[in-house]
Every structure is written in C-alpha cells, then in structure tokens.
Image 1 (spheres, one colour):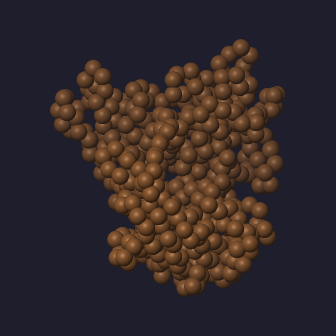
Image 2: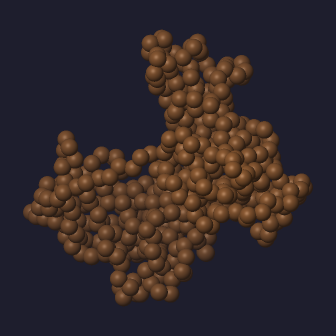
Image 3: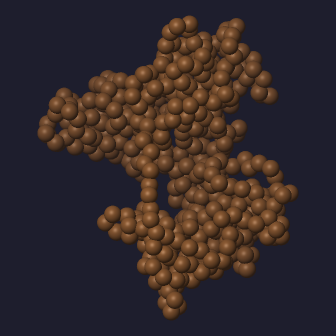
Length: 473
C-alpha cells in the first residue's frame, strides 16, 4: 500500500496521520502454539512544510535522556516519559479496535520510530533526499545521542501492534479500528486535531504464513552476506605515505562499556563469559582505512587516510595489515589491531585475553548522532557492505563520525574462558587502538571497564553484572 500523489499534493502545512486506504485485510496464521495476526494498517506520519526532527541526548550515563523537537521557530522539549531510551517515541498513538457490535475488544498504545527504512516522499515538490537515519537504533544501551526525523513532505510508517514483543492475535471477523496520535505529540509536531486520527475497516481472514530465517553472523549484528560493492574499491596504487597531519580533522576512537554480558557452558566442562563490545568515533573525521593486497598472499597492507575540513584527502600513513579470515561465519577481510578485549582481576591485572584480534569495520550502532558532523546515513553498516571477498584486490573499511562498531563475543576463543578462574570481582576491558597504529585526536578515552562478579561452583558458574549509572544492559 502506498500514498497516492494526488492526495498527498494537498498536504497541509503541519504534520498529519494518513492512511493508505480505508479498508484493511489481515491474515491470521498458525504460529505453532498459538494464532497470530500480521497487522499492517498502512498508516504513515507525513511531515508538512517543515521536517519533523527530534534529538535525544544525555550528558552522561548518570543523567536522564532529554528529547527536543527541533524547529525553525525554536525547540520544544518533549514531556518526561515520552522518551525513556534511544529506540524512539513511547506511547505515540492510541489504537482502539471494536468488533462488529461496536464493543471495544483491544485498546493499546504504540511506539513510533520516525526513522523508517521505507520512508518516501509524498509529493513531487518535496526534497529529493532525506538526511535522517534509516532506523532509530537503541539496541546498544550505552548510546549517548540519537536523531530521529521525517523530511518535509516525506512519510514514515507507524507501528500497529503493542510494543510487548508478544504475538498479536484477533479472531476471524470484521472490525473497526480507530488510531489517534496522542496529545503530547500533536502539540510537539504541530498536528491539527482533524489530522491526528484515522478510522479504518479491518477484516481478519484465515491465511498461511511462512518465515525464512536468516543465519545470524557471530561478529556483527545481522546476517553475513558475501558481497563487495564497487564504491568501496580502493585505488590500485599504494599511497605515498607520510606522517599524520599535525592539525586538522581526525577520528577519536572511544570504547563503550561492555554490554549484553552473559555466561554459558561450553564443551569439556568449560565456562565462558560472552559480551558485546563497541568502539565508536567521536572525532571530526571518519576513520578510513584502505587495504592493498599483497601479490599471491592473504594479506593486505593497510593505510589510514586523512582529510581537511572540506573533505579533501591530505595524506596517508601505514596502519598495519588486513588479513583474510577463511573460517566459517567469517570469510571476509579483517583489519588487525583495531581493538583488544581483556578480562582483568580485581587489582586490574590481566586474567584472560580474548582471542579476538582482528576486525571488519562497519557502522553497526548509532552512538551519538547529536555531535557535530555525525553521519546519519552511513553506507557500510554490516559485513555485506565493507568486508570484501576472497578475490578482492582492495578493501575500504570506514567508521563514520557518531557511529560505533560492535562485535559480539559468543565464540570459543573470542569470549573469555573463565573455567579455571576463582569466584570474585573482575573487569571486562575494551581497549581501542591498542598498539597505537591509528592516528587520532586523543588516546585518553580509548579504554573502558565493566565490572562483573563470578560465583557459583565448578559445575554451575554464576554471573552478576552491576549496572553502570542505572543502565543494566
């Protein structure tokens, strides 16, 4: 379903909630142990003559998140409770579903992420491009700042079911559905009362449902697809290397506290601590590393490139190597010495080092899109877009400003083997640029520590992870 141009041309100055049609059909399918309805109401929030832009920010992990609606006539602070994490807007709309007799059978609120991947313009004279990210993020609990928006004259699809994570079900039959944007957002986004509600007819019918699972990659979030895009092919000739510029834009690599931490038993009575680790770029330049393949070898020589404030290339320096990783689940080029993961004892001395030593750089996480020059729509967001193929003669790996590169640690050799460690307090250390091969504006913020406590017995180890300023991730 899509928005008709003829209808969209009459878009009012303010934003509005709009339906693709008045009649909606949904299929009810057998989900194994229960039934569920794939509910798609075809609703969109359409920005008027001015873009909708929200910036969510916290000064530190000890401070609450505050969110402002950015406007030409000044900014508006969203009320407390509308933004409680970095995943989007809470309780954006209210959905009322009535049966054929007019009885309310479902009443709930839905959340809203303005950064939808399928965002489109709704009138020909609207801007040709949108600057806003393709998703809201929020997966990383240590995100510092997010930007959410809908370009003027563009539309973003809404969420239609409750944000419970549970399957949504309705019996077969006919219903009426009313959806209303809640008052806090009507005021904040300038949505007139008449443009804040829609009424639909819904028919739920019996249907068939199939789902194709994607094999998740163990390094980054998301599936691994072996592909190599032409825009990431590097020059055939190695650069004339020199010293890094003394002044000018540079990346600033920073480590977030480890997150998503768990403990799991392995083979031969071994125990492992698994975790996610994120290094992000808070600098004034992207980290751009090109790899040039050595003849007949599974190695590339890596160079870091530098740019002036206008984006002109001003130099390059050697930055180690890239190596081909042929292991199943990898099969891509890794840049060495980007980060290092250590498990430290309570006295901060080394207990165990992770086997993860090489990385494919990708912009997997929005860490702070409110800082100057943050890139909201990075191109290389997963292994498909940045890691090359076995026969690649060159690879470009980029970590853009405001973005983070997250690796999960759930493989033997990459996670920490804690089988022989005594119970007690330990620290997961995430260290960016450990060998100092990359040039950056500051190395003082390259290391983070996350406290964990091991307990239990040899047959049943336990793990507790104290929160960081209330953040439990």
